[in-house]
Image 1 (cartoon, one colour):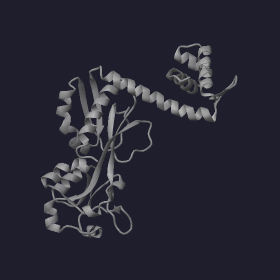
Image 2 (cartoon, one colour):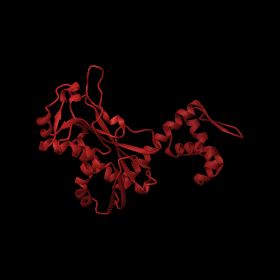
Image 3 (cartoon, one colour):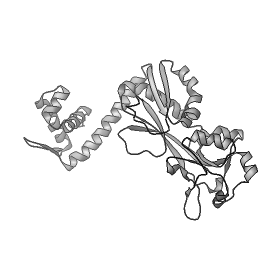
Image 4 (cartoon, one colour):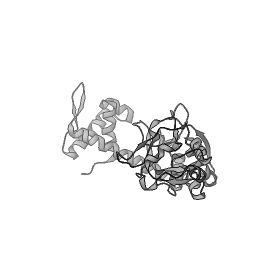
Length: 298
């Protein structure tokens, strides 16, 4: 006999609630009905999932294995049902998006007109912050984060990744010369981040590794500020392709030391709290932006 999703839900709820009676109350069933469902599930699987006594319930080794898989299956079913429901609905309501200023300016703002035309019922609120924010405190529905994600209780969706390149303006290179080796950077003005310091480890291969730690001559907290400084011919910078692709194409910035680049690409993620009331407009926005990012991300 095949296991049904209702049985998986009862099993997970019993474990989350800590008792059959508490699970029964939450699910609107009788304790005896919940107990029978759990016993039927164990009989189908031919194993004991939970050791039950009058005082406590303990998962068996098989139960711990089955619990992890059950959660994954139920979450996937929820997402599938939400997606099918989305196809029958029109997305609407306010969507609050937060991103670092460079990503907002170069990867979101250029496409807002097209997005609003496609989804006129969604009211956008675009906020920028170069530091990691608390989504609840800032009343944010979805945040875009660049770089490696720290462990978090938030749900995350990969939107792709973007190559990191070493760049300078043609005017700067004409004035100061073009470095041919990593060691040549010591003779140049280097533009770097005031925080976090990890962004000042440039993706360049050299004799001692594939990262070159720089000591910036000029510091800024925002990638957009560094981009403007590079455009003004103030020095050499390391920036992500999503914010410089137009400058490179137009010849305003020039890629240097390309043959020494280690190929690092910055991950781009959307993070959000799972909330079915917001899922439709969040999903529409993320699908849209991911498609646009594919044009200049890896």
